[in-house]
Length: 207
Image (tube, rainbow, N blue to C red; front, top):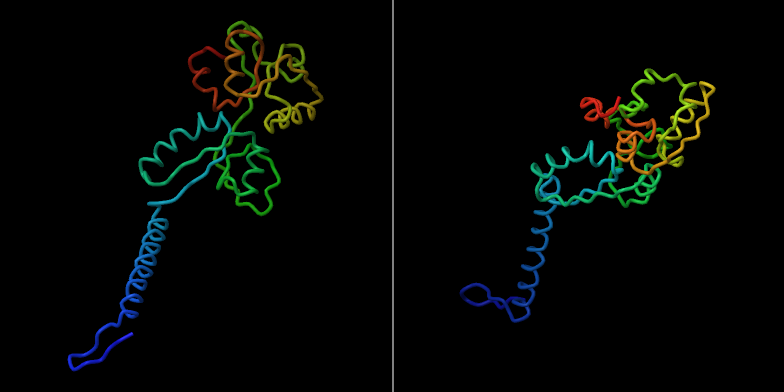
């Protein structure tokens, strides 16, 4: 690798070739260390989030806006689906975190409650004269609810059954915001998340 002479040493042709490769390897290592440091500082990377349409619209949007402003170089991905679909994505590693409507079996996962919600029955002005609806009276009004496979719907059905009431909705929908829209035009009484219906309730378009 070296040729010794009276002035010291010089690289041979082989030594020069090795030096070039060594410099390239060191540059790659330094670039890797730099990227790792940026990852640690949240200046680089990817975050994949699973959320339903409703959660994405009512809960995530302001959070994502703040996150992007604070960490502009983090690539964001949002996977849409029901709670059961998103739990499956989470277990498969297709998302890094997911917003689920509990309860679910979450063994092996870290769970952090982020919002306590209340299922409420709402209606448009056409049904305002009904006043407070008891569980028994629910069976006598046209109901609009989420599809049976949704976790929110299962929880509401179970709660009503505990009170001795079984309901058969006239309309079943897959999107929470449609529940609000259908109730507003007087098609029936909708079971919604009160926290996500606050604007319509405050305006008086729903009661």
